[in-house]
Length: 390
Image 1 (cartoon, rainbow, N blue to C red):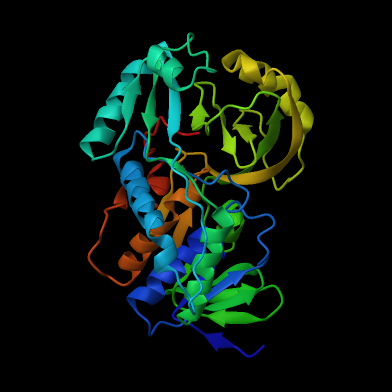
Image 2: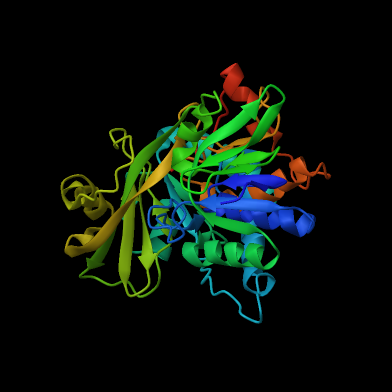
């Protein structure tokens, strides 16, 4: 391959890479942008292996604002992403998110709820009685109530990703099927990237959107970030009892979460302390049977009879410092930008992050101040507080 020069190279073509490329090329159509993605089928991408949830129920103001923006984007997404008369179908379903609240967490939950409503979010406190009225199959007695966000929901993650990718390409972004194996630097800053198969690409600005692989890529530029790949499993359940209406994404204080899926199925997952670190995509049905099913059946007794029909494993890019995003230019390397460490929330944060990075890079007025996620806090070992991580 002949040596090519770009204005911006994006390493990783998942939701972060494609949303950022789209926002950049939309803001400045003259930019020469390359997105490098090693697997355009996205078979192991966190974007497509997630449960595709978006919610405003966070305890950190910026995370709430990010999700509010995404929900707004999704409502008009199909019209906005038309290419050659073809419109994507993303099946955005606002079935809501219900967080059950334990007694010891009630004060923090009510504080977060107040902040969310102050920002204009539709979130309500439900007593146990109200939870039973809405979902009689639930047994919320061990808890003090819950918070319900009716605007929260889920969508087709693959369709959203493909729409960003297709739209970006139609606007002139170049996509490479290859792997960025290293970031090339000089004393002045970034100079480009080395690819596994097709030589090198030159650019004075590189954005690391490598997801679970972000830390490995950062190391090639001499940068250490506290991001690790953690395996999370999803189980698809066919329950003998079928409830007459869709269930919201329901999150128990233990971290167990489940929701309805099309075809009368239930999707379930849970983040565990002993979830394996590394690039493993193996799936273990026994984990559900031994550890998750008893808890599910206690909360939903009618789900005591079911079968596991399938499942999958994906990777969270976990920021071990504080579970929140690392966004912006690395202070010690000019031209090296990061969108890493989303810890399972990257899909819903992609649209806002793409816009933020494009405004930061192009020095445009910021639509949303996300400087709280600055990479400087990694160097300072200064963590953010977010109690609503799932």
